[in-house]
Length: 486
Image (cartoon, rainbow, N blue to C red; front, side, top):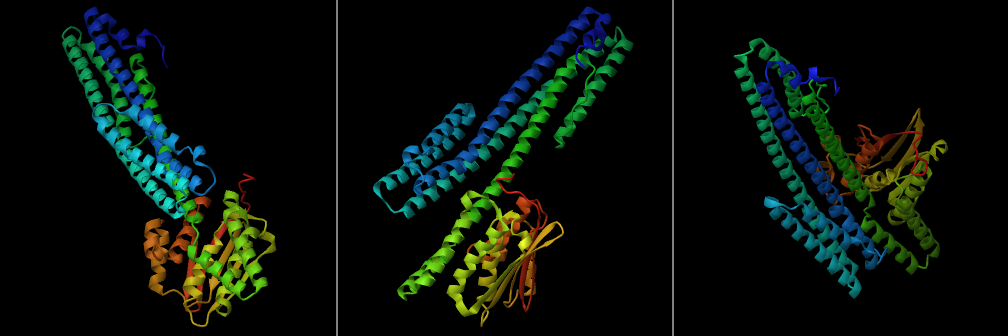
């Protein structure tokens, strides 16, 4: 506690040993405090700089491209597009950070930002000239690639900044230790005049410094929740408080970084969810054309309505959570369309208990599993087969299963799939389950990771398979709330 009296200060304890010793010791203490405050000021500027740089990453990697996509998709005009202003803001922030040896790094990033601006202008010119949307989408992909590159450059820049700051902190610590060494030397000189008083003073201050060194060692070992103990010496209290503030801020920066990574992971899963299988859409439209040419108007109306319901629920006005009844309708629309295409080789049943139809669940969990069962279970089997989807309540859980009567999955292949899902690696799952173009890889890993991420579960889907077919199931907690209720 600050202000406990002069007797608890270093000056008070040595005042009786002579004015010369007191003046010299105060000089060293003042130097220590100056170094401490300079270190704190430098660290504050460093934290603000890192926070500013970190805030640019989602703008560069996502928001600029999303703004341009809104224009390409026809949702807004280029006059309302904020991409150019975002690039200007990013450039202004980067320019304000460049100094000395860091200018070259910042200039490289600024040139990359100008490359992004050139892509935005090309897309604007294409849109004004009526060039095909596909070409503009290609430029948008290039824009995203450059944004990813700039994000990586910013991460490298941040890493270098942290390294430089660590070196500065090490130098500051050495200066601090040097000052302490000077104090020890002063104590040694004064020992000639007052050995006992000097020994007591050294023991008193030494114990305080050792506590701070122990605390600093914990921080160096990564124990960011450690805090320095309260000091009984007035001169050490500001240092203790500053060290605690530094540890708190560093802990906050790391927690914020983890949160950003979590949000990024969710965004990547939303992007996977938003992807539309073009072959399914093309084949469905072809089926509509065939039925129209055959003058089968009733079938055309049925398929069109099913397709409309399928995409209406897929979009759901951007909602992530829907009722189980809506999920069932979405699945019914998908299967009814596939039934028209595959006719006699596909039969299906959907059995959802009436008591759970109004429960809330994360959307698009069943359809990818059904698609996987169709393309990797029923379609390869001669003579076709059937798919059955069930949903029941067991206690406080909702249990869903998708079963197909296909040929099943070989044992070694089944273990590979289970291992890939257990590892929680999107790239690993994609490679081992079916590759980037496989419905199996996309469907299983997407559903598994979304369940674990959004529901906080350690396990997503479970797979059982033998020669009679394959069953994929998962469990969800009952009583969940959607966006409107949350």
